[in-house]
Length: 346
Ligand code: IMP
Ligand code: ZN
Image (cartoon, rainbow, N blue to C red; front, side, top):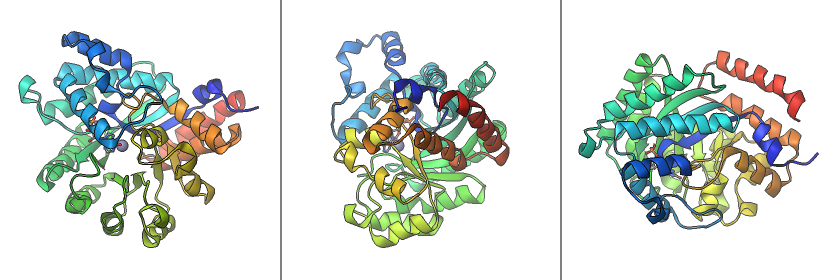
């Protein structure tokens, strides 16, 4: 039987690359803009229309506007709560959300109240009857300084204790055309020293020097995008070989890359190269709100573009469990859940 919408929705899934403020659904956004008295119709700039391409600059303009809408702890609570429910409804059984701690003087929100609010929403969802495990990754924005990055790592260490292990890692993200990833190496090392995992956006655009330096000096646990790792598309053979030798999983965000035109068309997506050589890959959304997609949709696109069967999609989803930033007990729990569901679905 071929892959269809129903199968992709029913497939149990792991989502490992989802930025909180980029993942807000249209209906949550409408509630928030109504609350702020902003007319939603005047704000199509908050998400791309379906199948409409733009640029990375467009996406970063949108994040700036979204942050104006989510500039207080009530809004941050609501988006976290709603985004978790959205993913749970789409049969995501394990979610690693990532977000950049942010202070907003206009509402007296501080980085501390921001992180505490996100953790409270995660905790409240955990006490509901939702079939989803949620973990949090704190993000470093490339536009910020090393001091800010070190502060983020400190917060991650402190709140990992306070949240009983909900925080699992550190991300590097933000506009790939700004800042230099190597500047943050001391922060990445500090995170590793404290047992935090690293999921770093690398080579979203050609940047071979910083990519190789970061890979060699800290060896991240996962790579976000990895669009330009290969020699023929802006990387080089040392980068490619390192990623292969160390088996560093790639977080694949196809619609995001096509929409921001960092990849020209689904057929040309680097997923095909890495998947075909058997490299660990996990299908993700990046920003399901901004890019008007869902994780089920991303699985469907992979199947349709690269002619993957139900069994192959199942394997992709099942193997993603290996790349989560949680302990072996959680992995075993998820693996047995997947096996139970398999006979009903595939
Ligand atoms: P937040 O961290 O929850 O505020 O989510 C939005 C932020 O995620 C943006 O401001 C960027 O820093 C980051 N982000 C989202 N998508 C991308 C991407 O494709 N590349 C790099 N950074 C991104
Ligand atoms: Zn991302």
